[in-house]
Image 1 (cartoon, rainbow, N blue to C red):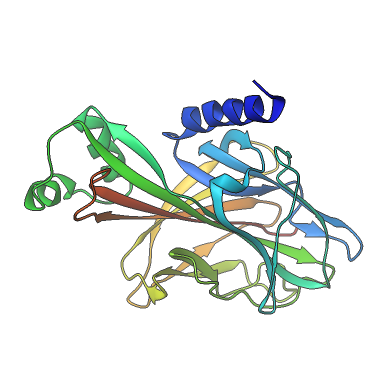
Image 2: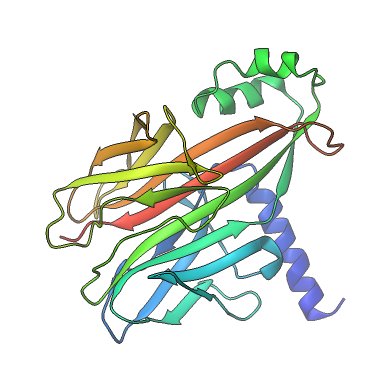
Length: 266
């Protein structure tokens, strides 16, 4: 077996092992960089803001971009690079790093495991929906995709986030790096470009020292959630959509995960 093929097999094993873990996010070494600095971040998969570091493999994503003021630049790296993102910072301002994974599949062999996941992500009626759609009992497959963004400040960090066309995504309505930031992070959750009203937003709050704190929030009728945040803390916002698939032989449910990471300056 050639070395590239061996490395690919190793990556597949790691990815498969982390597939049933929960959140996926872009985890920066620093969310604030100088005008001549580098933007460095890992791709992470796990739970409670801790997890496995994934390498740069183009087969695993459909897009991996740096977005600033509407300009989109694809991330380029060597196969297997960790960190997956290590580039020179562009012009001063607010930067959005965008990652959309290719679809993956998980097989549920225990109904309780699926309902536990669905309940946690705010779909308590999943059993009734499953039966109403005529879906089979276990085993059955779920198809899932990850849709992650991270906010970086380069230099002064000024600017605004915007929708970038992900299947589902967070749009930051406030800039946590702005000098006038009031400590209230306002985000809008979108699905197919439209606001998601009454959606659950799970927030992971990681201080410089101490344990991660997890809180639940909800969007209003316009898909907007307002979350108080603290200086010196980094954050992961998570929102999940669970939709039935009709006429697909591989899976019966689609799960779309949206994630947003950023830090609040001290």
